[in-house]
Image (cartoon, rainbow, N blue to C red; front, side):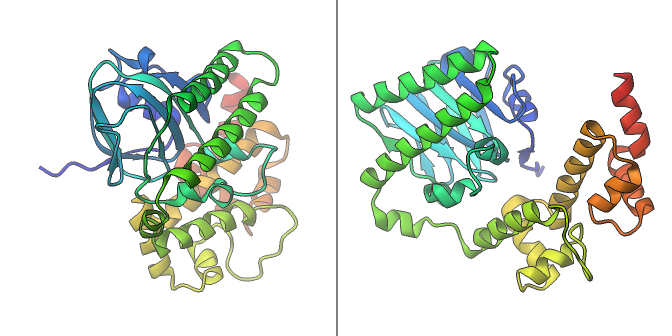
Length: 310
């Protein structure tokens, strides 16, 4: 019987799905492999998530696989995952090392206006290539991961911003090793398809579309047609591209983004429902209210009330 591939859209769902405890933060997590042993599922068939991950494997049997590349039979290894990549593993309960997993929003924070793949294009590679590293480089990354781990568990002021800097440092160090270690012909062959380039442009436009003070006389940023026109694609073609990469429709991704913005405004501002609807470029507040209720099974006012009661 056909079984749909699992897709984890939150860190909480990912941790639950692989059998480990919930993350301390919503958009960043760090673990040692040792602490996961005995709890994490030793076998995970192909699945996808919506985060970036960087892992340092120091030892352990079995393998983890991203795309067509595997850690099997490799010693100290750095390997990566990108959103919507197919990942699977079959590991022995003796893995050693660390990993971090984080969202695009966490990476950018206050440090970067660019998307992560603009600065680190090696993360655009569909078949991400693991890097075997020297003992000295392994020690360097162990120290970096230990510092991040300690900061993450400290609950001290500015811990998130400090860790964000650590993540940037780690990625720059990986990029340098990548340039030295990976055959450029493999990089060229493994570049994501034109579909991914379209999807990346779509995500950038989606991020920018709801900034305040814009004027949309025709299609609205909550509609698939809006992005299809900006990308010079037929809406059906555009939706098919998004579906091939994410297994989700373009409208699902747009609606999830709008819903997150709406919940944030309802939670953190005193604006009226009407004002929030106009902020999100709905021409009619009742259209916004109907959209919100269809997704949340409650009206915007009821959602705000539950927050106050909680």
